[in-house]
Length: 419
Ligand code: BGC
Image (tube, rainbow, N blue to C red; front, side):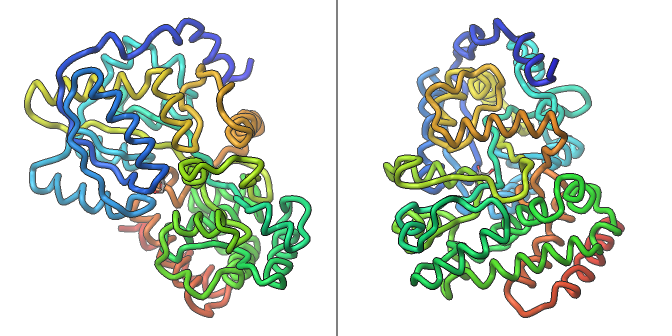
């Protein structure tokens, strides 16, 4: 039986287990970077649920898509000996902080509520350090999506979403000819890296993506396939408007909403933005995976830093239980644009994009084409990710050749690995 299905079957009773049995008057200070319309709505659900349990929520939002500013703030807080109680953190970052001895585990909450049985193993492993849960996942975000405005496509004579990069490029030219910006984009390193990794998956396939962006294999990093990926990224650079530099991702989404731009390539937090603005999927906006197949995985989770005081430690446990409760996973993800991390939450009330994400995720697990996001900190240590972002952004903002980009990238990754 399929691993995902097996986990769901084993957890047949898990829908009955909720965080409701952990009522307590805990306090949590929560550091996160969910400040856009859709994001704020989603995190508001968590606050509401926590307060309904009698807890006190101290909100510490640090604006900045992708979380780079939040991670800098977190480091400063920990160095000052004053960590927040709960922090939105992910991927190898969880392991890095756990290794530093900075995290409390929530293993007792996880055991009591049988997390092992309701999480896909690929996620459960990321949440554990030395066999114990140190993080609670809220969702599964897919990074390799194209969002589109159907009216803009129609005006440019485009009848279907592109399924190859050649088609994407041809459609972009049609939009250009119709006076519409083909690609809404914000020139920030993490957004450039988001385009880059989707292109690498599309051009090279999942095995290549894994070799280059996860295993950091020098032969893959210097290959012709990587050169071709940069060539496609160069094409995308030609499809953005002159004011792209520094633009926040949600403002780029708004360009698609208004029909000023045809497409945006962005994770499904962009859907949260469309929904928060009252837009209807399939009518006001379209979704399709970026060309190439596979699934770029991103998952948000919360970690619990070592804090003093029974009230705060209780707050951490309440929050962990709540995050993993089926009801909360449904409400939160309906707002966030993602799908639940738990495998046993019915998707009946979710839209077609979410259902597609779920179906493609299962297919990707089965076909071994599920890859972790480099741009969204699921794949490699922050230091290595930083090198990728630097080179990709330098390429995007100059006339650097693809050959030079590949050379610089391979050297930079090697350097980061040696440090
Ligand atoms: C996070 C999302 C968030 C997005 C933009 C991603 O790295 O996983 O939850 O909405 O960044 O801020």
